[in-house]
Image 1 (cartoon, helix red, strand yellow):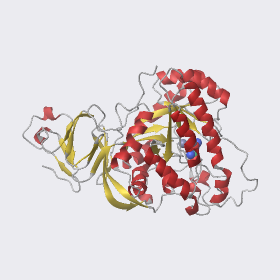
Image 2 (cartoon, rainbow, N blue to C red):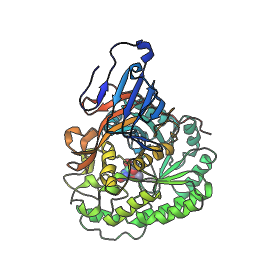
Image 3 (cartoon, rainbow, N blue to C red):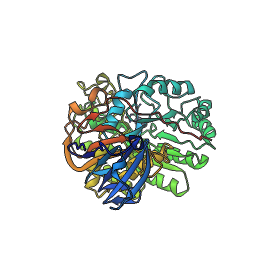
Image 4 (cartoon, rainbow, N blue to C red):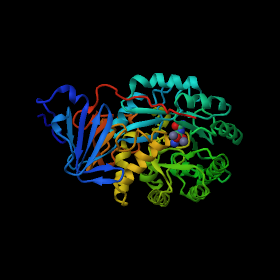
Length: 476
Ligand SMILES: NC(=O)NC(NC(N)=O)C(=O)[O-]
Ligand SMILES: [Zn+2]
Ligand SMILES: [Zn+2]
């Protein structure tokens, strides 16, 4: 038997017909997060990349000799691989900002087994069927985790939506304010009416960057090197007014709508009211709104700039409460990197720098660092970062849970381990992040993608990309 350090990895070297072992693996442990709770003794039978069976309790009807590989997680946590439904992979066209190889290696190292790729900042943006095909051609040979795709709604592309749905796009994203890149213009209400008419009757979802220009922005903002100047330029009213529009559209058309990266807690009553009125509306927030707060952002530190902005500590606590009571459905990274030049790190000009925070690798640890001390459980984490995000992307039948029939996507991690973000371990392109040197709780030990180990803390990231492109089937 072969036993590796850390995790017990028992390999049977003799005694069975190897053909029977074909791709049959076993993961066992004493802290497995099933849909109905965490079990103190259980195992997961994996065959050809799928979960074939799950067993709870000591007397599982299995003979370990029948398995090609047995991974014993011991007391470490075994949970579904994370599904991060908000990641900007800017390839092709801005691969120097972020590409599939680096983004998906970072995801694998962070316990993420599926990312859903945003339709911007690549060139071309994913706003036509042809552009979607180009996107997939670039992604295909480079993915270390599975990748699904959001399309984009921009002015005048409504006739591209159904062809993209039929080609497997997960859903669509639109902006109500300048997106940061000219080739992905924001929509007007007229554009939204045209798009909604195309989406009605499909099961596709429309995601909104929900900020609009408002009149309560101060005339003089103060020094561009001070974070407070940037924060004053993006008041909560920009989100509040935008979310009012989203709620009305959602109630009118009954098309599933999703608010991405909610920062302004003041908008939560609008969302509650719309959902109370039966609007098919979901909402996410991001790790940076939950773990960083305005008063602690250093001057010139443009790596903290994102839109909408990181707000104050009081706002942060209301977001955590909303996560706990179900008013916010999921937590994602909104991984949106760029080149060092565009972040203006020397000049430290918050107003002119690129808006976007790079963090896809750190979400599991960020959530656990902030959430465990606020009483969030492992099951909360699975609901917020696996189940609900996979459902949003139309992957609920195969990703985000440990259930027979689902893909064998798992992350094994140590919830007690403390570690610090350091440059050598950062996998995303350009390695810029506001989390550098931050002490985090919860360390990924092994990431398993459809039964294959794609990352382990002892052997690093897999030598070859094993990720697949995920196409949403059955679009009406
Ligand atoms: N073009 C972008 O990547 N924008 C992103 N930038 C952020 N969040 O600052 C976003 O999600 O809006
Ligand atoms: Zn956005
Ligand atoms: Zn984004």
